[in-house]
Length: 367
Ligand SMILES: *Cc1c(COP(=O)(O)O)cnc(C)c1O
Image (cartoon, rainbow, N blue to C red; front, top):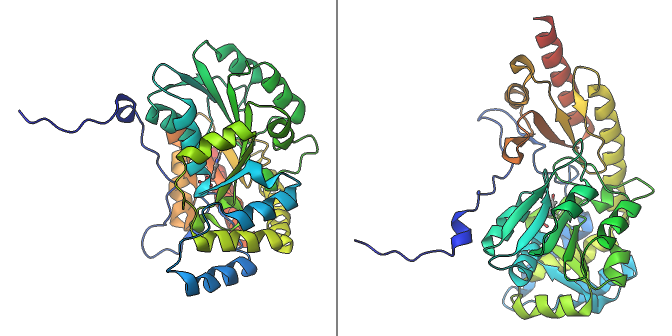
């Protein structure tokens, strides 16, 4: 009998993350709308900084990403010593799970929350507890009702991926106020740059004024997904704990340099946001009616709920869009098999999506 090295028990319970499809079938030009990336590429200043970095590849990067932390602190009026940069926010989320969760512990996630949360929770041999959503909105009462003596973390993506819905500042404060002080509230504001709602709060104030809140952010949705760059902001004791475990050179030098340049290019970020707001509103308007439910989105995607009818299924719509190179995200992995998540793209892409979905729904409704 062979004896094999055995992973920790939680590892084998992980349902593998399934990334969005990234290609149309061969021979068809791909328009990728499946991973919420920037449709306008990266900031030209970030690209230039990245190229410049090529001259210094032999030298270790700055272990504390100091310049980037200073730039973030200045932009958001924060204390640089309370910022940590990560290789994507994924790395930081992993570290938080590893630090604050262990066997017997529970982490609460919203029913349709980001798939990474249950993965990192199980990875730390803890148990994810799913709090029911309310019409695809994160439900503060359901989260608070899910708290047990074993709860150690609440993961909140706000706006939520993959529904695009958000909790306003008052709801966020109510959620925090209902948690014991030994429960860490992780506010993942990956889409904060795209929010237009006046009553939204990315979590800075809670992270600043409470000892059990940490805010996690990313550059991935604003043009630098390939470089893997994220950051977190929290109290000294959280920063100290994360820094103990974080790899000393976790963020590569080219990513640090491009991040600083991207922060300095406010014009580019503004262009992204203007494009997003315009086409998010336009596509939502075009698609509503047509027997489709469009979830109200504050992010850089919209989520479309298809009717309970095999002729009109999200899966079929996905297949048809693919024939036109339009790669969207069918949400079966998120237990939303009747939904497609569509990243907001260029004008051309949005017009093509609206056209094909309207033809699809019209054709089916005439059958
Ligand atoms: C896209 C996304 C992230 C970003 O992850 P990175 O590792 O920074 O690319 C984090 N959280 C949520 C909810 C997301 O949708």
